[in-house]
Image (cartoon, rainbow, N blue to C red; front, side, top):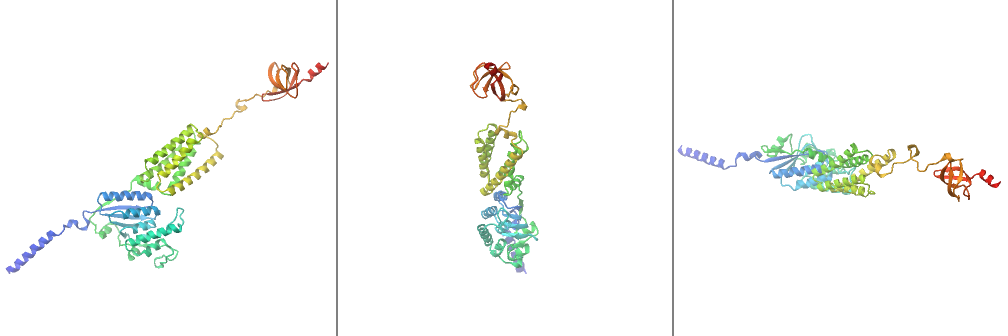
Length: 448
């Protein structure tokens, strides 16, 4: 009996020592770890890239153990998606794409680049055809590059690349998933889970963290600031040409209004908004803004002190140069500048045709005219002298001086020579020109 008790006590002591040597429970369930939620919403463009760069940098600085991309996007631009994929590849923090609504087009590609994909019930992922700026299918070269990227994204986590390619290539026939030939593949949550394109299905963050083993982790949520929201809007490739067109049109209309009014304010505000957005997004520096300011100063100098267009040309060149200097994509800005130029030229033609030269534009054209109605007479026409007679004070051959109505006048004879002292008669006047002929009365007297 004593040996039995001794055995029990010995086992109890050994069990207690073993339990003390185990890691503390505080470390289980992800307690003490940090999870960062980063929203991937709206269109995929350069503004989203700038926001994600800030988010990843902050997550790394605060020692985050996991990043969750909450994906809800209809897609966007290939170049921005490619840069976001590079950003994801270059971080050592595990990344999970949590599809909360839809991950289409570029959103599907970003999700496939994550280490894991978790989808909420009723969500979709796929339909990733690449299109150009007009919404039409991109050329063969762009399609080929995009298909290669989709396949690489699938291979990254050992997913069947056939489905990734079917999301971007409508020639792949998958009728079992509503993606027959001529249609793109879009997985719902259950289909993605079945084919290994989603590692789990979770209804909320709690279920997501439970799947990741981080249910007790500290949750941090990145929020896009107001400045970043504005930056995402104004850096959108569709918004850029609109801003440039408003800017150029506003400045042109300002030339037709006295002082500085609404058109000029709208024009400068649109261009400043362009630079503000690109500076917040990290694409433009102060050098672009300074060059823009120099261009505006040169345009003002041209208006105040006309320099045969030299200051104006330099100002326009500086402004256009600043737009390129502060851009994220040269082709987007080039297209936007061409659109703005077309709008401006059309506006100038219409204004010249229907409005004419008004406002500061008067400085470029001599608008004042003198006329007799306003009291301006360059050469007075003395019509009242027609029929009057006088005396030639000098020889007229044919021009000379005559005394007519007690006034010395420069006259010219109608024809030939008229001797001094002869009687003359005014037969016509035109401006300062007075035409006379020898009076017949004088000729009769000289012949008797």
